[in-house]
Image 1 (tube, rainbow, N blue to C red):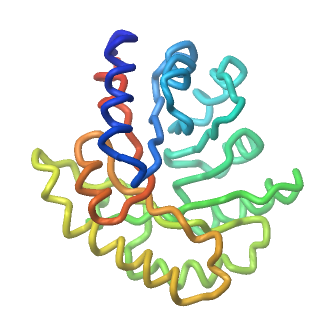
Image 2 (cartoon, rainbow, N blue to C red):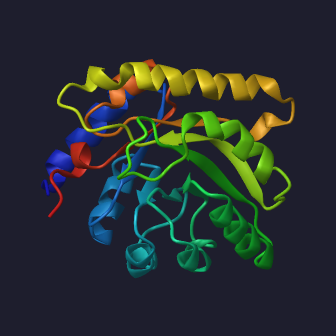
Length: 223
């Protein structure tokens, strides 16, 4: 993990590169709470955790005023009740069963939870997410769940040495995002396209992503 000065410089550089085109989400898996708080002092306003138990361990120590905490990792149904009142968005909705559990837990607490539909961009068997052709039927199926707010799409692209390799995939999902936005007048909450990570966030933003999840480019290699 980088030292504080380098973390600050990285945040300043990334925010300058994004230039208001996309929101920066700092992916904070394995990052201790004191470093997360330092990143917040440096201008980060949204953080994302991958693991429910790790989020719970750090939650009380994170300075929460004026920030958002998102859940960005694969979410098991038995963990939903642990994090439902601690996050403002779940990025990784990939099954009807998970949707029903989020609905149940949110209803019990009088909440409405923003969710992003996770797409498996390249149909990789090792990754969660829906095939792109199943997104519209899935949205129709979860529409009656009144404590969910479908708010956009998310995808984890294939790893590559060249960030340009994923541009066509980014363009494809960006077009789907736009098409869904224009299909329904009730899609006022449909506003987030979360593509791009540390290695490819600039091509993702150029293709329309407005929320990028960046970890190692801020904090350095994970330990």
